Image (cartoon, rainbow, N blue to C red):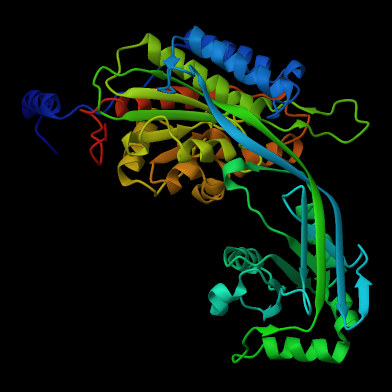
Length: 503
């Protein structure tokens, strides 16, 4: 025990040491009234975006066009300037899209003089073209080549113009089919095990598809059941070919088989828009921070005859766009930022991250100059105090460290990392990560299954994703976390670029 006479001296010494020690970073705090005002602004913007007047914000519809016009107006109101770096287009980055819906199909096989029109119950044919037709076999000059379980790569250029016949091998079929088309096969006929497998193909391929015009593939893909194929070729001969295909020594063989494949599709090309604004930084050439979120949703997705068929997408993703606009307002109204901060509202995320992929293909600023990107998606689901889902962790060490430090400053718990990781490839940030842009999605929506699972079960991609079901407590906390992080990363002195930004 320390003698009592030494206590005053000890207290003085400890006080001096405490004064010399570095102070811990302060916990960021915003008055309750300010948080209520933030929530009110978020709710107003979410309500506008999720209104029935915008009919679910589907690209290519009047509701979609009205949506990006509304975002343009709000970007101007919060004080952003154009981020296109194109004097001819102030807010808009056009995204050329192609909608394709299968219409008709026919598959005819034959040997000798016998021709069989394979019934729809045993065959399916698809093409992105308005009409595609391929012939192959004896007398046509087009070989029909059986590649078994392979991808025909051993044939090289010899496969060009041929009709390729392959055996289904789940998990590898898409890559093999793509390889055959890459070798310029005129059509690919896949033999699937049974009618159940064919039904699965139909379920995936017969839905209307949306894709980038720049990624259009000119192909003709046909499918036939094993049973129907055996009936045309002969059960014994077909069994022997399949057995041979399963051996190590198998090499592709030309078949004495006549093939006629035809399909038509309904096609619609149209332009949608990515919308981009910015806050110019005070230090040109120091790089940029990108904040993004997708504005599109599904339009009408409720069942026919339902009272409410509009999928308003309040959480997904009116909430992300509302948070982006509030972040822009707060960042613009605060201390000047050294780095440029861009705000990107992407189109066509729902059908396959199409808008952000178009941005990556033709960006208005060098991708190498983006020091960090923050995706905002489904931000109004969790209550205050919820753990934060960290999607994109582990892809950039420096950004990871900044995020974890900000979580500590805000006294925020890190959520279930396995849950967050499962969404990495399902959000716009994935296209940026693939282009070597450090990108994360931070949201309490993805922090725990007890929060996320009920939303997925009851509201996700359903008409029930309405403003009335929103929870803004976690959204406000997530917004303040992003504001703190963006201010840090927009300061080159606090967050140096890992590689020098290009002009």
